Length: 166
Image 1 (spheres, rainbow, N blue to C red):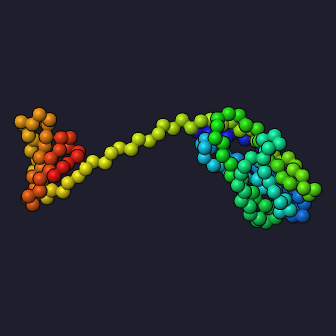
Image 2 (image 1 turned 120 degrees about the vertical axis):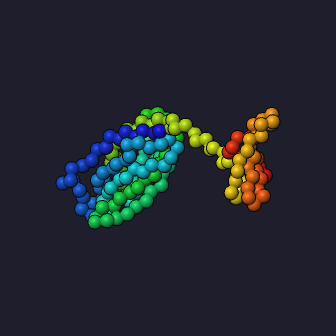
Image 3 (image 1 turned 90 degrees about the vertical axis):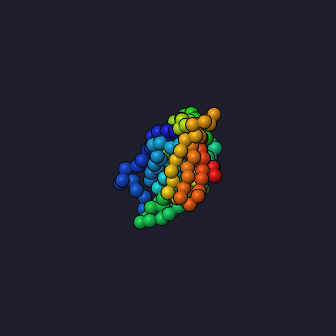
């Protein structure tokens, strides 16, 4: 299980920009994610912002952005993935009016490995169709063996009462 603990700096509601301003509004992230699986960081900006990215220091994290504009707010869904456990420091940045990256919010992320045990598939029993069955155990068999006899002359045998052979 990958745990994401985020510290987010969000401007007050009075700081919401008008549509023509290039401004960052907020960023959020889930509290818990699984190592190796995608999760989303959602950032909101003014519609004038042309790009948002997540950075570790000066390096931009490879991510997929999806953008939507509603009621004068641009919402960015940035999908990222953390493969290794550890503590990470991210900064959500936006492109400002002069084309440079400007800090929006800081995210502190703690990632832990997935500890879910693997699922083991149980084998499916083999079945045989016998109409109106009666069952008998062979008392002379070295390995306990059961036989099913049907009124349609169907016959099947099993050594475990789960898997049957004709």
